[in-house]
Length: 381
Image (cartoon, rainbow, N blue to C red; front, side):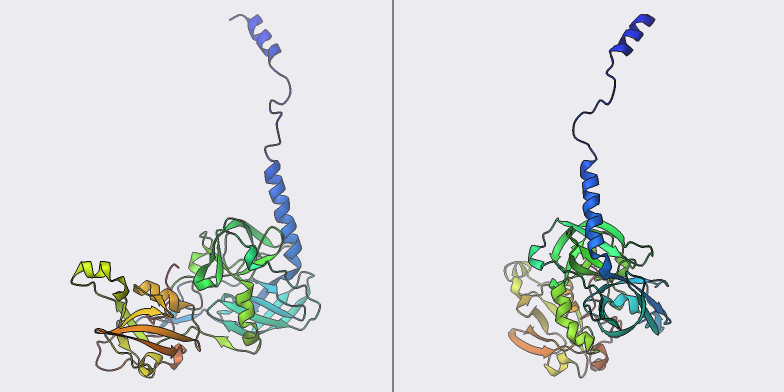
């Protein structure tokens, strides 16, 4: 080709931007602006919590005695949320697993106040603090009825310092998780924002970010951090226990006092297929003085349902028990040989359960607050 051809082709090429349609980044800029506005609206209610003292949590596991919890807590600030103008602040109980001796709260205006830990809910992983102030800015909460799966969710925290909260944008993955206690989100949830809010795009708080999964214990769920599976407790669940926490009560997991095992399949497979109501979880051992013992349950009994809901396998029963607190009453449908009956019992703390009754084979692990097969939280819901 001649040079004249190349010159002519260059002269015919259009000059200026080729794209003349809408700005391809307009949506992204608009979304970022909405997120910034939502966080700015809630920022005055998000506080930084710092602790001094305490030690790594201990779990009673194994044959060699107490060992450190599997998830090691690092030193550093955490997050809280103003619940009322008169100094009440709600956060996650995870932030106090070390049992610190001193707690301080830094407000959005840089005031730093000493806080008192009033009470903890070990079921929903909540903690209630009190500072001496009467001019705090409480959070605005989103009505539960307006929440929808798929809507944007903004996870906020103040553990990293700086003038503005740290944020992670995601969506609501599921509602009414963990026995109806929490929202599930794919926004990054970790110790950086445990105790912080999960916001909607209007800057209203949909829930309080907490770890809520795993094998039980004070740090359960922390091993899932930043995994895309995070939880935030609904406001009505916080209000449900607020007065109890303010009065200094500690809400602990409830135990029935048994060791459980999977039920053996029927010798006739067709029987299991056509009689699913006969499937259940077998009681292997019963602890003396426990609610199960007082209800006259025995090794070999089969638990078919709890509060009218079938429990076809061990994981299902564990899930239903994992979020029930000591002091709550439950009803069990129990089968003994060919007879079925309903029994009512009241759950108790692990410390209130005696030893395993004699006559049964020794358990592989002694029941405790961390290893009771009947109440240990499952790895997933």
